[in-house]
Amino acid sequence: MLKWHRARRRASDTPFTASRIVEGLRAGASVEVDLLIHRDRGFVVLHDRNLAPGTTGRGQVHRASAHKLRALRLRSADGRAGNDPVLLLDDLAGLLDSMELPPTASLQLDFKEDARALDGRCIASFAAAVAPFASHAILSCGDAEAVRVLTDAVPGLAVGYDPCHRGAADALLASRDFAGFVEAACTASPRASMIYLEIRLILAADDDGVDLIGAFHDSGRRVDAYTFAGPANPGWRPVIDRLLELGVDQITVDDPDGVAALYGG
Image (cartoon, rainbow, N blue to C red; front, side, top):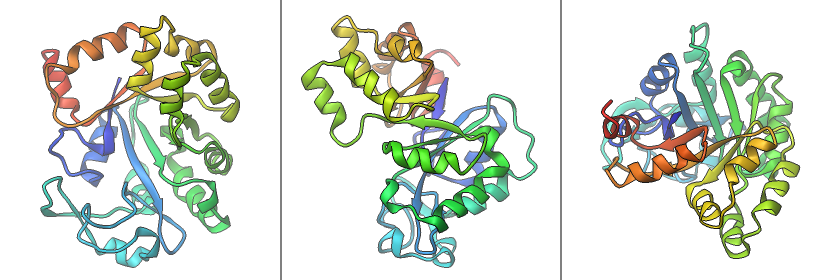
């Protein structure tokens, strides 16, 4: 139910560390990591296109080689350099190789670019890295064509789609055409099993008497609501309760431990 945003169990965690990724998956959690393309046309587990301030490197990710990236270390939220290396998607595949995972374990690979960034080398690199653990993974992106291209390359890889990008969320709040939004999302990514929605859209629809989650459920999709950012606080609980009452399937949070504590866990 709670997804570990950027592979964090606590808000204070450094994002994307191998130890947290493995820990979360072994616990049967849903864990999210971000993917960008590097110079050698493979993928690196990072969110920002600039290597600073999230790593000890400088410059643009797309200009950095795999060799350079592997030599870098991740920085914590307060800027401290630790001992955790930057991970490539290939490295992640090695970590998960032959690992026995619970059925509920799921690794969300959130591609932060679009289909224009992809070429044959990228697609082949992605397929080779992900195929061994595809049964425990889902590919997501805000670009439906990128979702199609990458998931077509990996049989058995679950499909996720985020229809809130490129101004779509603000446009929806202005138009209030929730039915049209659902139809457009399902048409754009017809094989998507999970739809990722900004929390504000779900609540706005509910305020208008529209069950946005229910509409996607009726179309055979599950719904992830994102993101409760930063350390958990008591103000989150009424919103989480409301999302649960609306039937959300998964909630993206920076602080899973903190949310559990709000509920006495």
